[in-house]
Image 1 (cartoon, rainbow, N blue to C red):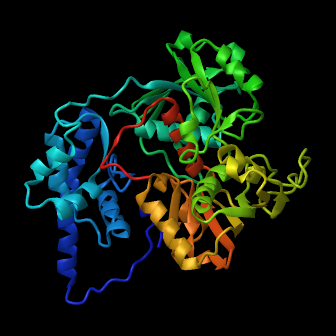
Image 2: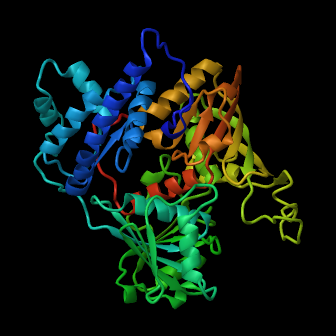
Image 3: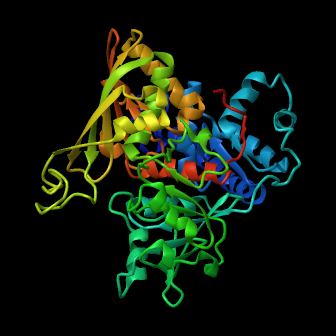
Length: 498
């Protein structure tokens, strides 16, 4: 079944002995407890800079139903749903401890108390477990680092949504400005509308207002300055009070150090992150794989491509355990703005043919790009791509020859465990649903989702199918790289091994 709690499939359960009134009353009781939890969670976040989660899924800004869905998701790891009657008193006790800034996994604390509490009072158990941060009243939060989006296309707007969603509670990044080319009358209103409404990802969760006199958009509590310029040399960010900013270049116009270095000549900019594969000697960062390679003196980085982000984490964990001799990556990719809606001239082969009507064979550099994040696979992978008439969500088919023999159930169990209980759970998800299709992965926050039912293993040959939201999942990876560049990550309690 899918591990994405936002698209949980039906699960068969035994309801013998239950009547409709009992079932409804049980739901209403749990819903009431979840509602009681919401203000406590909000206070922890806004007062103490604490991010509570259930197995890595943040509880902040969730509805009561959303909180209950995450409690049910816990059965994937713990064997049974997490009881909100168990977590509500735990969250209240966390609130009373006046914690320093941290990320707190409520589910793992609850399970640890259940199995290792040894008769202690919950408050005493938590005080001991969280002794490092108890009584420190939000310490550890830093001043947010300014972020500028250079370009406001598909990835730019999704990264904007994520930055706005995270704003507050000591979060270490703040969206300050967007740089776009001037297009004439009603430009700001049109861009606000594109942020507000999205045909794939749905409406913006909040309110948006515009101030055309000052070229600003206010999205929830985030005030975004729109700056109109045709190239980086025309922008003085310090004139807008922006300093030490990270510029996220979403345009793809420049992909090497020389071109991207133009941003560093603008007053107020100290680092640049490209949302496309970097050329030359630029570090291509796939978070979860080589993000620890980011150094303090790195001024220009690439977040690689959506496909590279989807497959590299899976390839890494497979190579770690089984060894990869060689392989081929076939990408079935949704169409993009680079293609034509109807047949027309295009500089690329085949891309001039209608994206909405055709499957289009094209090239992909993702296979060779893997080696920039995972050098041990250099020269071991080939790749190709097929663009298909869907607007979002793609699939990578990994056809691998391994050093060691593997069985389907074994490799699926290994990947499932990676997706649940290791730091790589932010990158790798897993599903074994027999009914899941591409639209079920819209909004997935992991870089890739392994489809366990499709796995084929025979001797040393392995074929894996990896779904990925090539827009939103990739944008989440971009955000993780940004957080690492800005040192905006909170310590996790209890810590994960690996």
